[in-house]
Length: 271
Ligand SMILES: O=C(O)c1cc(=O)[nH]c(=O)n1[C@@H]1O[C@H](COP(=O)(O)O)[C@@H](O)[C@H]1O
Image 1: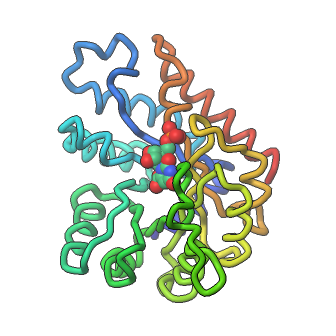
Image 2 (image 1 turned 135 degrees about the horizontal axis):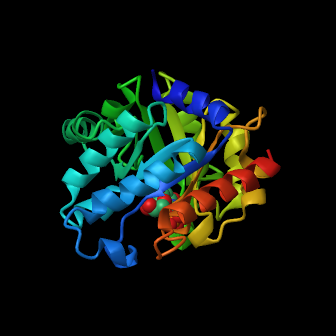
């Protein structure tokens, strides 16, 4: 099954637009992991198992694993999710993009080594840098459009030919790059007006990955009302720290499940 069809099926089967971000930070793990040499895998596995029922997707962030020399844990985590939660797609957040010959290796890294269903990609080197991802029609390509961080506007808002750069990215992806129907766009929850602009440009066929609720303070109601598609889907509202570290106690997995369920319910109130 393709990334897009798994995502659509999951939106409906789980009645959820929540993407659970898997960003391990051992200093925030419960004390019970202190002497566990495989803590990164074990913690993320427990969170995935506890939250899967409320998730339309999982999104592990590669730097959080690589910085800990835990790429092996990331491989095993994605394999675990595929085995135990089949049908819940995994987006590898690695924000890749490079000249074509190197980008081919990034595509192999994401889709063959890690077996991710989708990958985040940076569009600023142009189409050929993203082409090896686009060519994998069964996998998703989640392209940075208007990011959630405070400095997002430094470059993404620069006006070119009468409109900001992020709108050119949205237009180009929707009209030119999405030939296989496998593209999504990243638009931060912290920018409700831009969410609305991008939805107006791309229509209903391009889902948004929306990070920035929870720890970054984005407003769920504004996200959903401004960015949902006509049928009340179209979103992967991603939260990492607010779910992962909902409790540092023995109830960490239950607390994560509660946080994911509450986010799902909050989103659903405005769909
Ligand atoms: O591509 C992303 O996932 C991403 C894009 C963006 O614009 N902003 C953003 O925060 N992210 C990622 O989303 C996650 C947000 O984490 P929390 O703020 O803890 O929910 C991190 O893994 C970020 O790297």
